[in-house]
Image (cartoon, rainbow, N blue to C red; front, top):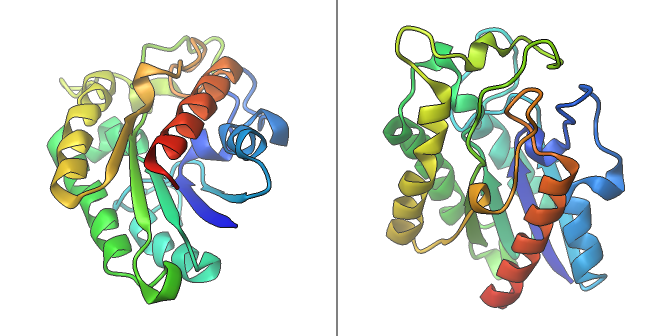
Length: 218
């Protein structure tokens, strides 16, 4: 059985941007990948709302991915692959990040995985680095949370920042020998909050991930 850890944020957790609830288990992209690939694979979802690559959220504790990742690697080893999809929350305006600085954050996680013994036989697991779907303008009257943290404030526009992640992540994947998938080319976010994947987005992402894993020979 192939063990695949999916380490991400609310779009791995399964947050429904239309109502603020969680998508049913069988509607999340991780579960759909499991269904598509079958019992020869163990898809392990490790998503958390608000999770960043390396930054502490000043308003919500336990959101720093750099702090959480070592525990996940240890608890789920041996792993054949780690799928990383983070960066959306790093683009919130109060972090004042750029695509470059978020790319440095994801690099820290890649380095942590590659330095670990969480794979088979004490080796490091492979990595599929995924850039998240970019943030779009949401509708506060329909959103389930305050969209101002994703608003353009003082010239810091999260939609522009998140839109630049694919290029940065592709560079990091090439530099570190990781596989790469741009979720923004296949999955749509909901128009209510402009951040979270729709049900159709989860389906599309699951299909793309399943195809990518077959292509990788995982």
